[in-house]
Amino acid sequence: MKHDKELILGGAQLGGSYGITNASFSEKEAIKVIRHSINNGITTFDTAPSYNRSEYILGKAINSYGYSCKSKINIITKTPINIMHFHSVSDIHFYLRKSLDRSLEFLMTDSLYAILVHHIEDLKFSYGKHLWEFLKKMQISGKVKKIGFSLYDISQDFKIIEELKPDIIQVPINILNIDFLKEELIYIKNCIGCEIHARSIFLQGVLLQDVSWFTGFFQPMRDWMNEIHLFCKKNSIEKYNLMLHIVKMASFVDAIVVGISDTHQLFHLLEVWEKQILVSHNIENELPKYNGPRELIDPRMWRKL
Image 1: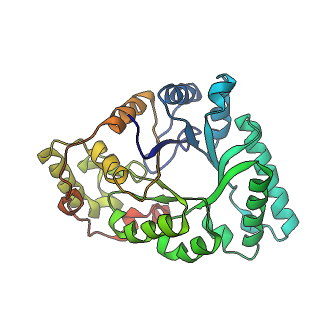
Image 2: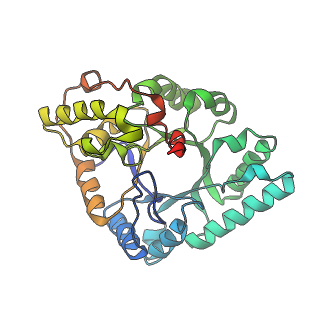
């Protein structure tokens, strides 16, 4: 079935544990997942140098295919972290070039579909403009097709999106925040013209946990999760399917990045992706509204845990 949105396999779990649920799997299992993904029509993968061995494992798995298949695969990677610690343009460019060359080596390719600034804060410090200039240079050279950045807060970073006009932005979009983001993202898509890639649609796995899991720091979310559980039961919808569908039906989303931790989850994802769930067109207004602390839906605040 042809979809107007692309399913992108997230690579954070491919290289090691990720998220508050610490999802991870072995290199052998990761390669198996990547190959199953490709064999089932997933052609875009999201990774980063900071995702431990993710780039290396992706390259190893993809390189086992012939050229005709490999040429259809798109890789999105990111800039390295700690760029703001450098204090000269030459040092920044050297560090970025070294990181990009290393990514290309691990991924066993000469070019990438896209490279994103991993932390948008890097664009705001004194040498941030040189970081963006480097990415533009790599785009002109053909090393990367598209450039952009990953961010958390649309409102906070709206000005820089308008100024730099990225090809892609990657932003957390899920059942908890989609209503707040809708207006700004529609403007960004239609007036600025960049691709919008939704990530963290399951909030690093938190939104898929049983109600009993919500204790301690996440206790304030427990009542809302129980209402979601009852909503799904009443409407005969699997919670995983609901969380995916809410983002998938958003007109302003071009692609959805989803991470998994084993082949079972992959096949489940593929099955759910193809389904058309029968729900009210007014589902967004019928869903239980979350009115708890905002820090619970922002993983940056979880560092306190």
